[in-house]
Every structure is written in structure tokens, then in C-alpha cells.
Image (cartoon, rainbow, N blue to C red; front, side, top):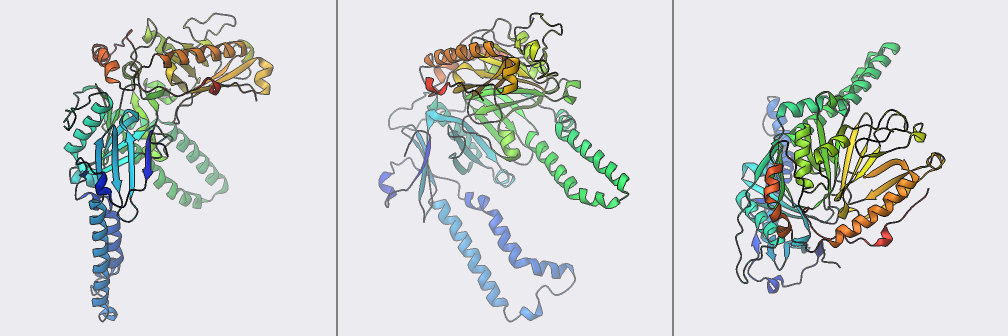
Length: 530
């Protein structure tokens, strides 16, 4: 069993022997906040018939059950007492500890379990507040580690102030602020500077002009045309479940993106969002593995972009919650994108990052065959124009000193950034048609997430050269990482981070924020033909 990231282990028969005095319990109301659905189910089971009879104007209790009412009430009381007793035992046996470089959470009274995560391997810390928890002033603390999110350590629930204090303590210890032996340092929450916020009107507009809306309009046109041709209006009845589902999807996207705010602090990038259920994420510097900036066709009318990230620990989570957790910017203008890129990549590795990023977002290769690219991006050769008649002038790559930039998509503009030290492995792909036209794809592997870096249809010789060069850049970048504690690396960046928070300014120099060394062997950098 590895203790590198997190683990679930059986506890000894006498766990008190392992307690050193630092163990604490969660808030007493935590089991009820977690299990309110069970209590509601019990109430629904025993009160549904009585409620329906009351609405119909009949007796509150069925006369035929009058002789069994005491037994029913006794049974309901027993179920309720067992449920409450289970909640109390669940609370009593749930404890947590931050000591010896680990955060540990003990749970269970029949089947005991301990989860622990190394502080220096914590990829992100989220403070989650469901609606009921917000009413009680409670919050859940979730620690993500580098295992694709399958063994995340969750601590639910704590008072909001205590959750913020614990998050600050863990981030401070992970950053290298070690407390004195025998004392539990109360590390204050790091100050922050708000970088940007998304107005609700822009969020609503982005949803109405999203790819989902285009698909809905196309589907509606097909249904209406089919109904007119077949002269059958019953087809519209089949749309009711779909309309309800679409409405729920829009509402979920709106509530998850509402009040989105991004801020920068010494302990990382802080993201807050949510209408009913709020969430506050803290991604430490250097934990972001890859960034993707996209622009759907209709968003080009208003100059809007969205940004996604890969973070070790988040993995590929399903549903709207997973999409919101990997969202760095739901919708923003180009200055917002530049501002966020300056935080993710403090050292772009070029003299004029604004020009390079702009070329990656909106640039095109010259239309005249044989003309040299003017923006520095190496694009698909002209001979392969029949393979990518629309995307040839967009598909391209640009390598800076610190990251590889990949752009693609003529209609759906996409720009992907991968810091060199985050390249875990690579592969060359070349199918029969690509071999015929002398092009190949280069795939970069990072952690699981919505970003899949891929250089499309590059010249075969240039793809092989990029493969070798990128492998050397990744090895050299990893050699420069000397510590997993980021505070010493991020501290010199404070002036430039502050400058990046101001609109239109992107730092041009300085060392990038560094984090843990990616364990990648040269044998992982394989070439594949297929």
C-alpha cells in the first residue's frame, strides 16, 4: 500500500493508542446536513397517504388503520431513532488530524477507515457549501491529490470560518511554513487580489449562444419539418421531456457559473462560483498541467472565450460539477484571457507574450502558398490542404522557453498551452492518408482532464524534430525543479503577479511557479505509427 497520495486503510482495534492529542471532530450537525435526504424519505414514506387524504378533504388518518396506528407510530419512531443514532455514531467516529506532513480523516464505527493525503502532494483544496450547509453556516473541505480524483479526502462539515482557517493552515504547511515542534500554528488566511468577475448578463448571453443552443435549434427545425411533412402534431408531445431536460441543463450551467470570481493570492489561484450551492477552489501555483482556451463560432461576434484546465486530482469528472471544477473562466473577453494566462504561466518564455497569445487565439497562416508564417506558428504544409481544407491555416504550434502552444480549429478556435515540465509522455501518430501527404500528429500526455494536447497534421519531419526537442525541453525543465514547496518559488513573483492582475498587463520575465517533479522516465516518450 502506497502512502504517496491518499489511501483507505483499516484502523487498529484501539485507535486511541495512535491519537497524539491533535485529533478533532467535525461539527455535530454534519450528519444531519449529509443525511437530510434519508430523514426526508422517512417522513415521505409515513406521511404521504395522510397528506394526500388531507388535500382531498378526507380524514387525516384512514379509519381502517385506526387499530394499527399505535404500531405504525411505534415503527416510525424506531426507524427515526435508529436513523438519528446512526447519525450520532457517524459524527462521533469521524475525526481529522493535520500532523507529520499528512491530513488524516478517520470514519466509520462498524467498518473503520482512515484516509490520508500528503500535504506536499495536495493539488487543490475546495470549500463546498451546499444550500443546506450554507443555512447552517457550514462547509465541506475537499483535498485533491494526484490520483485523478478517485481517492479525494473529504471533510464534512466544519464551520465556514474553521474550514477557511484549516485550508490556510494546510496550504501554508504544504508551502513550507512549518510550525514549531509541539505547537499548532494558526496560519492566517493569505490575502487575495480579485482579478476578474463574470457579469450575470454575459453568462446568460454565453449560454444562449453556446453550442448547445445551436444543437437545440437544429433539432427543433428537424422536428418541425418532420411534423409538417407527416402532418402529425403528436411528435411535439415527445419533445416535452427533452424541453424539461434542456431547461434543467441551462439552469444547472447558470447556477454553477453564477457569481464567478477569480483572485490571486500567495497560496494560489482562487475561484469562487455558485448561486445555490457555492464552491471556492484554491489551485496552488504550478499544479495546473495544461490550459485550453476555446471560442465557439457565435461567441466570436462578441469576442468571448472560455478556459479549461487539467489539474491532477480532478480527473475527468462526469456531469456539470466536473465541468465547473475544471473551468478556469466560463466566459470572458480577450483581456480576461490574457490576465488568467499571466497567472497560470508567469514566465511565457517570449519577449512579446500578448502578440504570441493573440496569434494563438485568432491567427491564420498566409493564404498564399509558399509564404512564410508571420506570427511564428508552424502550420500544416500546403500539400496537406485536402486533409484539412478548413483547418490548415489554423493548425499549428509554437514552442517558447517555458511552454508549448498548440492552436487548431477554423470555426471553433482552440489554443492549448502545456508547460514543458508537465509533459509526462508523447506519441507520434501517422495514419495511411497522413503518410501519403507526409504529415503526422504529435500527442502530448498530461493528467486526465478536458484538455487533450495534440498537434494536428504537422509536417512529418517537423513533427519528429518537435518530438525530440520537446522531450529535451521537458527533461531540462524537470531538472530545474528543486522542491515541492512552492512558497520559495512564488514569493519572488509577487510584484509580477500583482502587475498581471491589472488589465492588459502580462509579465514578460521571471521564473515560473514550480511544483512537484513529474516522475517521467525517458522510456515513456515513445513514437507510435498506426
